[in-house]
Length: 443
Image 1 (spheres, one colour):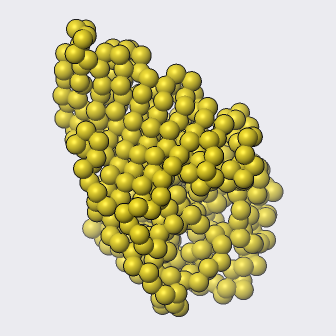
Image 2: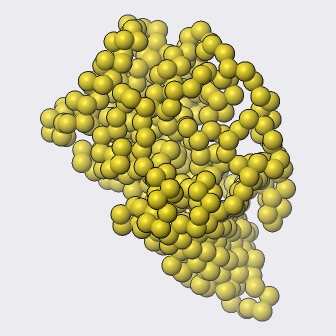
Image 3: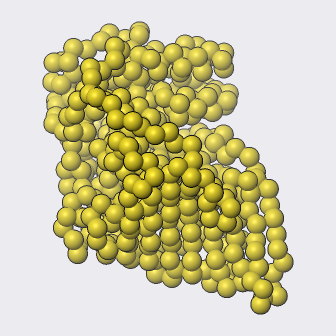
């Protein structure tokens, strides 16, 4: 989230008062009670960006590749990030947008048709829900949120208010991944009993312990924390490094795992897992991070096993690939990553020939184009919110199994873990006062 230049600033007292009143008021309104914005008659789509870090600026740049898309406002809690978003608009020769710190100033605007949400994970759910209530469509980065219940609240809001919401896991729109998944689903690979996804990443720097300190000038740290627990400012926990702390995210399991598990599930049916177990720890990067640098999660689905594996500090992963996905059937195995995919045949079988397919390139423009097209057609996008919630849930369950130390039995109908109350508590939502999440089942 970013900073404010053109809009009037709000005092902290006013902000807290408006948070308590405004959030509660929005929660009580139904869709027809709030004016739904629509794209202008000339088909121009006006977007507001909430969160203008590197991911947000990358998303904005892709949105502006499309004629007729204009950015009218950028939001972030940190002044240092705003210049990057303004530079994107300047590079694309677009009018300079307004800038604000409070994301509700984006949601409230009558001239915003869609919001792009590229904040830290703990700030995905509430802006999405309030934007849906205000009649905006939403493009929200993965994972949907930090908990399963938050994701369900987002799905409920999108459905209740008839909004188009796309999760930003762009590999869903990558043609060579689509082709590999289609090959698996065609049955040519034979029954698939084992699916793997892995990320071995050697580029993450060590985070030496740092003392708590005052937030830097220009950063509204209380607003950066938002619904997360109140803690002193520490440089190691803020901005990019939020990923490695449970208050704000789920480590590599949700940062990379959602992408790769999504790819893996593209080749399988949509049934939820029955059981989940996980193990791991901090064995390589013994620094101040909370999430494990090494983790393995095993999921029992009705007809196959899925194994997720990640490791930081090293880059020679499974099958010689730093990261990837594999489907293993009775006729052979498909290996997939961003470079393409290949089919390895079983030596005792003669029904297939080896195949190799190159990468189809950057999928992000196609993913965003799909969202824009669906805004106009009102058809569900390629990665609709229910599908995004499904894959995010799978990743969250891997973390819950690791954090609780239990083998989980997942009740997908009620979205509960009935066999372990302490693990089930991690499914729910706990927001710092005065923040509240509409439609949350267990807030």
